[in-house]
Image (cartoon, rainbow, N blue to C red; front, side, top):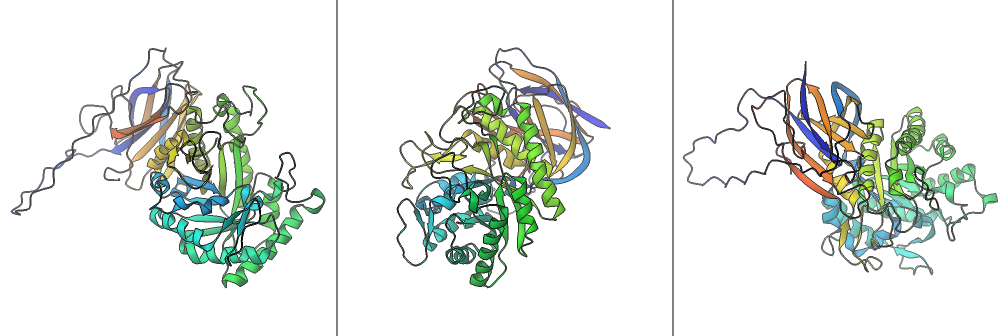
Length: 514
C-alpha cells in the first residue's frame, strides 16, 4: 500500500525527509529525577518551513513514486569532494589558524580532496632539498604537505594527489610520493602520475603543450608511468595505490587499465558539461547558463560516464571522477555563479552516484572569484587569493553540495517520475530507515511560481522535514541561498497519508545529526 504526500514544488530545488511512522508519541516526556543538577534548557524549536511563491503562473503537475527496492549504489562523503590545482598545495590558508578554508570545507561534511589540474604538469615544482623553483614554477615542499594535512585531519578527508609528469623525472616524482605517503598516511587513497596526459600535445592555448605530437601517445605514456611507479615503490618500500589516467578519452583509459599495474586502485575520468568556449548558441555546449539545464547535458553525462564505468567494471576497479565541473572554459563567463550552476551541480552529484561513480571532485581554485575559474566551489574575495591571502567565499555550487550532503551515507532507491520533464528526482534510504527525496526543478522561477507535486511513498512514512536552495531565477548571479533543514509544515497525527500543501520542505538525515 502506498501513502501519498501532496505539496507544491517551487521552481527551485527541494530536498525532503520521509521518516518512518511510530505508534507512540512524537516526543517523550523527561523522566523524573532526584538529581540536584538542573536539566539543560530546551532549545527553541525551529519554525516550520513555509515556502513563498511569486505571482507567476504555476507549472505542470508532476508525480514521483518511490519504490522499496535498493539499486545497489550509494552516496558517500567521497561523492561530494573538491579538486584543487596542485600549486595550491603551497597556499598558507590550508593551516586552520590562518584562514577560513577549513571551515568552508567542513560545511560539506568530510569531503574528499584531490590535488592536480593543468598546472600539475606545467607549473608545479617539487623539492625536499631546498632548491629554488625555476622561473614560472610554483614551489611545493614537504612543509606544504604538512600544512595541508592539518586541514585534512580536521576534516577527516580522504586524499588523492598528482605527481608531475610534464617534465619527465621519476626520481623527483618518487620523492614527492614518499613525502605524501608519510604525511597523509591512511588519508591518502591514491596517487596519479600526471594530469590529462591525452592533452599534453594540445597547442590550442599557449603554454599547454608539454610533449611534441610525434613523441607522445598512449603507449609512451604507459612506459613513463611504469617507470614512475617502480621508482615510487622503491622510494616508499610499499605498493602505493595508483589511480589514473585522469582523462576524458576512452582510449587512454583502456591503455591505463591494460597496463595492469599491480597497485591500480581506481580508474579516473574527467568530465565538464560546457566546453565550446567560443559558442553562444542556445541550446548548445557553449558557456551560457541555459545550456547547463538542457537535456543534452544530462544525456551526455550518462553517456560519457557510462564509458568509464563500463571499462572500470570490466577490470573490477571503481570509477572516480576526480575532476569535474559545469564548464572547462577559462575566466568568468555566463555560467559563472548563476543559480543554474547550482541546479546542475546537485543533479550531477546525484546522477553520477546513482550510476555507480564511487568518488567525485568538483574542480576549484583559490584565486579571486572575479575573473577566476567559473567552476570553482570556493574562491577568494576580490583582490585576494593570488598570494595565499583573503577570506574564502562560497559559490552557488557550494550551496548545492551542502544540500546534497544531507543524503550522505544513504542507498539509492528505485523511483518513477511523470509529468514535467524539467523536474528530476532521486530517493535514498539512510541507515536509520529514513528516506530522503531530492527534487531538482529546472523550471525558471522567474517564469513559473510552482509545480503541483504528488509523492507516492511506501506505507508507514510521513513527511518530517525539508531543506532547499533557491534563487529569484535560474540566471540570477550570486543569489543562490540555502534554507537549512527544518520541520515540515504539516499538521496532524504522527502518521498521516496526506501531507498538506507545504511551504518549503527540507529534510534531515537523522533527527540528531549536526
